[in-house]
Amino acid sequence: MPESSAKAIYTTPQQAEAAFYEAIERADLDAMMAVWAEDEEIICIHPGGPRLAGYAAVRDSWRQIFASGPRMRFTLANQVQSQGMLLSVHSLHETITLVGETRRTAPVVATNVYIRGALGWRMLVHHASPGPAGSEAAIETPKTVH
Image (cartoon, rainbow, N blue to C red; front, side, top):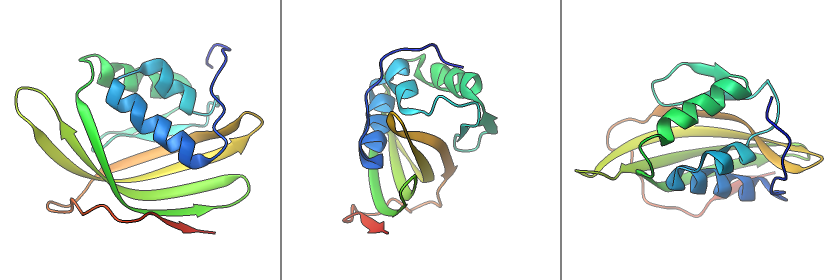
């Protein structure tokens, strides 16, 4: 379990999602883990990777990803959100641009699940899978389903 520390309070799942992608782009491990629920039931699946369950496994995976510093930029598209009082599910396309010696892009299909608790909205699940080639879609207005 994580150590206790003051965390931002995300009053909407959209705020938590924005903080999630900002943390990735900055390669900021503390900011990344502040988005996640403090729960051993959290799940993270990186594109092409195994299912990681529990706070320690999720944290270690992001630590490894961030080890080389800020390298990723995200374009989000085709967002569909289904939100209830305590749970919000977001399905979207990510186009990841890897910045380094050469710029490469990778299409990804992601599902993010957020749960509402006493300290606001937190990520419970991030599941990202490689998207089909050419699936980098134009940015659309996000859709919300209630």
